Every structure is written in structure tokens, then in C-alpha cells.
Length: 116
Length: 110
Image (cartoon, rainbow over all chains, first blue to last red; front, top):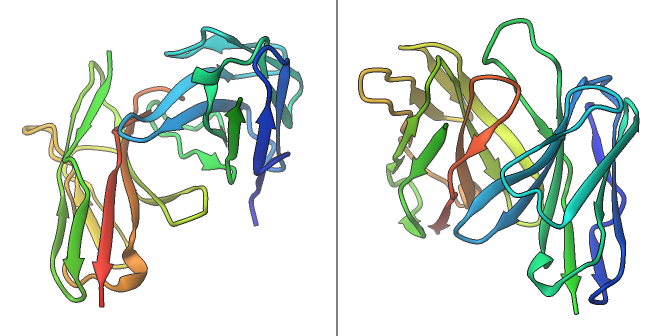
């Protein structure tokens, strides 16, 4: 059974803290993603990576950074947490695909982060 | 850029009712289209997909047809069950990134 595992289901952090969200996939996927899910806004892409040590900004990268040192692991970093970063964070992975435009992503359970 | 527009919810239905969730998209290329479902307390999982025009995706009694002429991918189910209560997301991809709609919350009452 394919699996994307996020290190925490729930986190509570203080404003100004540096926060690490970890994600591991066991499917040997090339692509990994971090999304943020907020009511009424759907999922918004923060960052993605298509290879080890490669990363690209998504739609809302401000206040975040990422690290991908190994193929199976993709970390999201909040450099200085703020209350407007309280949200559900979803990690996903997908294969490189064999045809343009066809990419099925597999998601982790999500991490609900609260910044107080 | 790419975008997905879903009908707003929430949607509340009785068991065995017909469900339709509208989804339209804007894309510059030839995207693949997806419906994802998120059950309470769980992550997103793929419900169905279609990779080219006129393809029909189906799974668990749900269906959606890729309509290029109307840029739509509406989700339908003929007879819903309480267990179908979830948030449904329409999504598209024309490379390795997925763009999602806002999600539609569906509640099915017994």
C-alpha cells in the first residue's frame, strides 16, 4: 500500500518559532509537494520539488522554505511562525509520469498547525 | 494560468438522492482532470480521473466526463449514501503540478 507520512497530525507553536514539518514517501516518487488547506480556499501550493535538492516556488511561498536532501523526504520550514500560518498542511508525492499532463498525486494525512 | 472553479457548498442531500457537483476549468494546454475526496479526519484520496477529452472517469458509483468544448468536469452520482459525506475537490494538471478548486462539502442525511 502506497504511503505518504507526515510526522505530526497536530502541532501548536508560538509566534516567532522556527517550525519544521516533515514528510516521507515510500513510493520512490520524483515529485513532492506542500499544500496549505484553508476553508473556502481549497488547496494552495506552497512549494514543490521535482528532484533531490531541486525546489520551485508555488503560489504562496512567502514565509516558507523547503528542503529535499533525500528523494523520499521533503521538509517544510516556517522560518518565523506567525498566526496567519495557522492552517492544515498537506504533503503529496507523484511520479514523473509517462505522458504530459498525467499526474496522480498521493497525499499524507495532513498536519494541523496552530500558531499562538 | 490554470484555475479550477467549483460550485459552492455546502450541499445537503437525503440518502438515495442524485448528486451533481459542477466544475469548470481554465488551462492553456491539455490538462488531465481529477476529482479528489476528503473524508472527515482523513487526507485527500483520488476518486477518479480523465486524461483527455470525452474520457469518462468512474469509481464508487461516481462519474465525471471530460468536456473540452465546455471546459467542464462535473461530478455525478445517481444514489448517494451517508458514507459519501465528505469534501470533494476538482483538480487539474497540465504538468506535474495540481491546481485545486475550493472544495465542496457534501452531507448526506439518512
